Image 1 (spheres, helix red, strand yellow):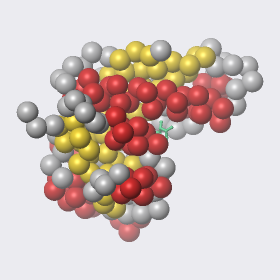
Image 2: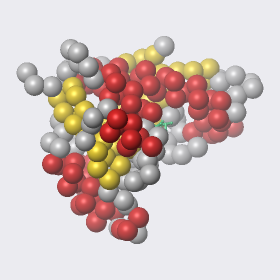
Image 3: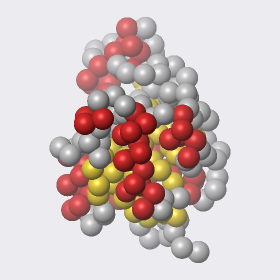
Image 4: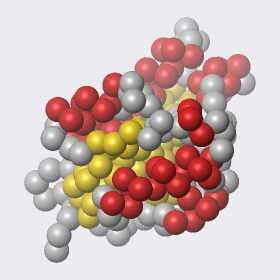
Length: 198
Ligand code: GRF
């Protein structure tokens, strides 16, 4: 059985992309086929190239908010890569329902909160503000509704009194790098039962 082809979309440093790529070795049922970014300056692009993985950039800025036109261009390298699975990993553009529908059931995202809490941005600050005792990250199937969709995995961390949004984000990021690869492997094996960490 040939390995599942995984395309990963990034916008920045790509630390989650690196964790996913570095996990796809040996008897892992998937292999990376493309790293695609909306940002030519994304630090993750060099990390991908250094690993010999094909990369592509489709800058969203010329489309000036015309999401459909941007996605039409984004789809060209993505479809050419023939992915079986698409992973959003620090990809900071909101995708339209049309785009998501094309990959429904085989597109994953990692979000830095214990969904359904704190959809959207500034999740760490919001959890601290709310006085929550714990926080974490979630991997979910991408659906048309933002940061929604079936949960495929979650990792929890305690919020300490001294935590700031930055210290909390750093704690959560460590778990993101454990959770996302574990979920991807299980998902590529056809198993959708949630991964719960620690
Ligand atoms: C991470 O906090 C992730 O939860 C969010 O984007 C941030 C940066 O991710 N989606 P990366 O280092 O670019 O993978």
